[in-house]
Image (cartoon, one colour):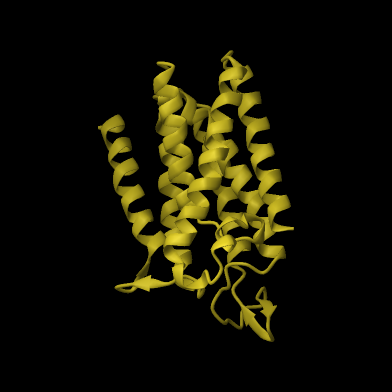
Length: 224
């Protein structure tokens, strides 16, 4: 079930990116090509990121390749997908930031759809809570982390829809999405109990700090 929603997220993201490209009169074949490399990078990087942060969970070598059983790192997938896309875009001498902006909102929507699968399959366990919207897992009421992310992603998408009505420099839309999601994810991770920590923070939190620093600096240079 989780894999079905991840696939739906990919398809929805590609559909929305193609629609946005048509509005901007950009060759949709380039969008399909970039999407192919982004999906490939997302799968490879997502699985590799999860493996590196959960090495003790893999007793069987073949389990590494069973991606349909779950166990994917969002940030591993995001970084690899961005890198694969960047290499393709640079090879064809295109404007990376222009294409990144096209994928900004579709990425958020696709991610939100994938989080529905996480919610339905009980992934990303939250800490115990007595809040009325807690979900019962193994008899313990817990924070519904995927639901929190779904809502947050929706708000970020709405914020981007609002600011994109204005004339923006290339890269601002994508960078804003990365910074906002990274900040929210950093704090939500404190409510998760299924991620290993190092010096009090998880691997994903260190990544969010790096992403906020890099893309935040990019935004600063665009607005100063």
